[in-house]
Structures are given as structure tokens and as C-alpha cells.
Image 1 (cartoon, one colour):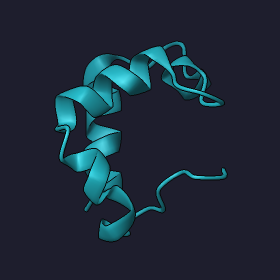
Image 2 (cartoon, rainbow, N blue to C red; image 1 turned 180 degrees about the vertical axis):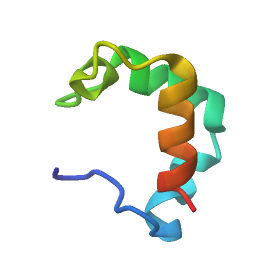
Image 3 (cartoon, one colour; image 1 turned 120 degrees about the vertical axis):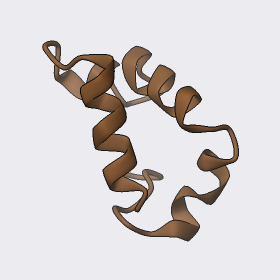
Length: 58
């Protein structure tokens, strides 16, 4: 997706990580711009989304 940070690319994630993981989880749950709420995973819990985000930013 255009403008989306790349998996494992710390530079891509740096500005987002300044806001903290909690904010990233909130955005993932509610969606933003072209990104739909929960990334279209309606059955994903907040904990599952947090785990996915933590994995992507490594």
C-alpha cells in the first residue's frame, strides 16, 4: 500500500513508533485513510492486532 511502512523496516516505522504502540493499536482498530478498521479482520481482537504490530516493527 502506498505510504504504508514496510515490514521490519525500522526507518519506515520510526515516526509511528514515537506515538507509541497503544496509538498504533487504536489506529489499527479504527482504520485510517485507505486502511479499513482492523485491516478487514473483523474477528481480530485488540491483543491479536497488538501482537501483529509488535511483530511488524521488529
